[in-house]
Figure 1 (cartoon, rainbow, N blue to C red):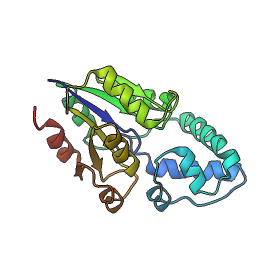
Figure 2: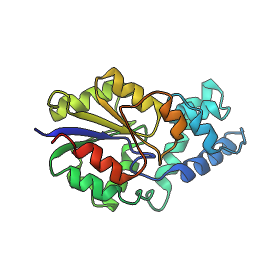
Figure 3: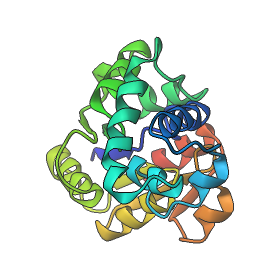
Figure 4: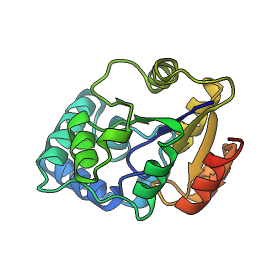
Length: 211
């Protein structure tokens, strides 16, 4: 039976950490709240969303959504999409031969779509639930799993943040945490993911098991 494998975007497929911190610095500065964002700011987040990053960086609540909108606009204006993590294109293409593939992301559809086209992955992705789609992350994961027709016990969420692990648990989906993303291995360990992997090769082994 086909599995449903849902990938987070930033920090799992796309290497966006440095660019995200750079853009966050620019946005904060233009909004009048200069700061120097660091990886520690991302590691501190309990929910990996741009609005939470803005709050973490000192953006007042009444302007938090403005921070998100400015971040999206600046991200899409970049001349090239973010680079894919080495090995992840091969992982996605191979898994798509026997699984349905979704993307669940807090980024905008425009950024994800351009990334997929650039890396010739559009044809193997069955659904993208981006920040443009109404609903919280848990509801979006439920929609993906329902739309792609999960066989019992055969759905996975691959993420790089503690919030990914929690959402997977809420929806009875197997969580796979990767250590090459935006949050530290220690942070990920704290929420006990079903699997924790350190390389795309390890990820492939986990997701191909029990075929």
